[in-house]
Length: 223
Image 1 (cartoon, rainbow, N blue to C red):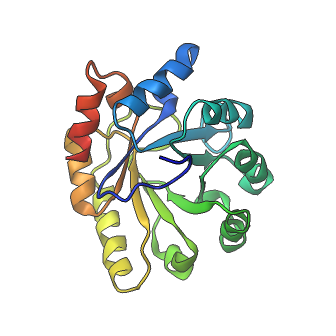
Image 2: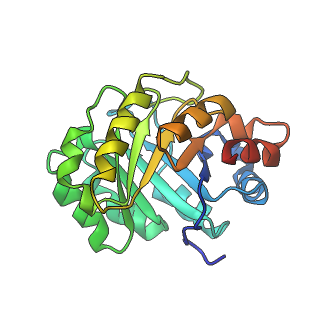
């Protein structure tokens, strides 16, 4: 598979490297790839929009050197427009920004698209999807946070499923095809619920990287 290509499959599995062992990051990336992962999900946190700090463009560039998987970069940061070029330069194939941090969301989305990568918008659990109907034709992905962002290992919030279903119903009335992604508390049970609601991309961190049998864990999500 060529670097950065999207595989044409029904369910895309995207391990979150936030749950990887950063002391052996290269090995964990290779382990995820060998287990059958389709994308790698990179959670970028700034300690302002969310109460945690993770990593920046240099670490993403190091990840890019060690995999040809599609790099799905989730910017949980304030003023993302200031950092988007650096993450694209580092190797991102898709940049997802939060609606809550973008007062000029249309401008930010098109800034991403103009640089030749895919663009997504993320919604926190309590954020409505309705504003996205006005820019849906510019998007490649909508990320539904199924936990409050900031930390791994949180419990899945079932109420988000109704939001996914409502957005999916709206989307079916348009001709636009895009990825619907669930992120937070994903395991074989909650992944099934998210898929039934309409998601085609599942992000999982602890469930995959802490699994005794990672290929089997990937398989359980895909099925």
